[in-house]
Image (cartoon, rainbow, N blue to C red; front, side):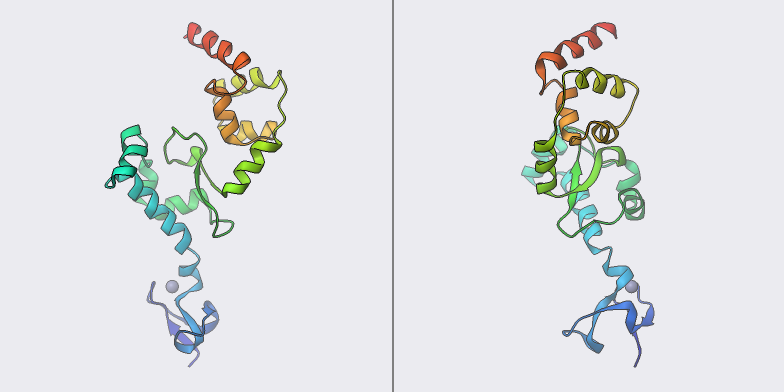
Length: 182
Ligand SMILES: [Zn+2]
């Protein structure tokens, strides 16, 4: 026997299309490689939608009550989510919302590990001139991730600055000037 039927997509495929597993029939995993590679991403997608439904009290407090939602494109299609996010670099990666007050949508999400996020923020060295430049870039509609890449810091740092939570001596007057204009 050189083929096996995948338990997920129900397609008959050559044994080489299944990962090795001593615990299953023919010494191979029940799901084909194409189906199992998506498991981690699918779990993240399902967990994200579940959190935003707010069925559990702690989820409701942190997501639904704060108005955090999953964008329409991702809400209805795992394939769209996977196309936008790509596959997880490692199983340890999880969905990270760059702006913690923002929604689950392509411009605000990335795969990240806890340690990467912390390392990014420690290595960031900004100068006084960088802060007005960041505000200007955001004013031109650039996403946080692009601004962060330009200054070599974490997108979460950019969000904190643009919200006046970091570099307050410069960011708060800039925010006030911006509000006075609009
Ligand atoms: Zn399959």
